[in-house]
Image (cartoon, rainbow, N blue to C red; front, side, top):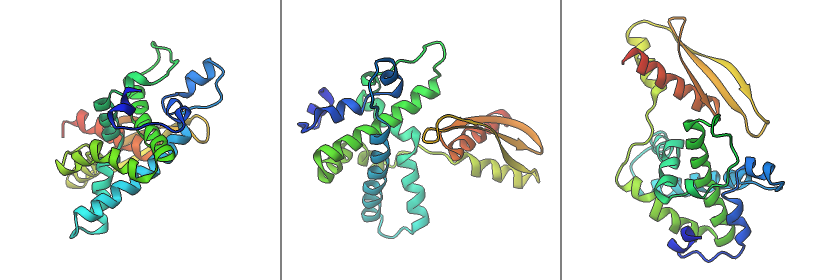
Length: 220
C-alpha cells in the first residue's frame, strides 16, 4: 500500500491493513467475515489518548475543561474526514453501497471512520511510538496551526434562545441500526417549532447537526 510506504510502515500483518479499509457492506456482498469496525473502535481510543497527551504537554497552563474542548476539535468527525481526505484514504475504501441511496454525509462519516481504523491497525501492528509518529505528520500539524474544525452549534443556538427568551429543546425522532452501530435522528425545536433535523452516529452528533441546520434556517 502506498499509504504505508509514505510513512515508512512495513506491515507485520498485512491483513490488518486490508481490514482497516473493509466496510461491512463489502464483507456482506463478498462473504467476508470481517470489517473495519473493531479497528475503528481501537483507533478512536488510541487517537484520543495520544492527542490528549500532546495537548497536555503543549498547553501547560490550560485547565481540564479547555483541554477537553481542544481535543474535541481535533478528533471530531469533520477533523477525521479532513485527515482522511488529505491522505487519500477515501479512494482506498472497499464499499458495496447503492450509489442512488448513499448520501454525502454517509461517505463523510465513513471517511472519518477509516482514519481511525487505519490508526488502530498501525497501533496493533507497529506499536504506540510508530502510531505517535504517524499522528505527528497527520494530526499534530493541525494542532500546531490551530485549525478550527469543530463549531459548537448547540451552544450558539442556546445563546440565541437565551437572548430572545425562546425555549430550545431536542427530541429523538428515530433510532435504527444494530446495537453497536446505531444511527440517531434528532429534531430541534425553537419556541416549540421544529426548525431542523440532524442524523448522526451518536445523539450528540445528531444534535449538533440539527442545531447547525436551525442556525442556517434562522440566519443567526
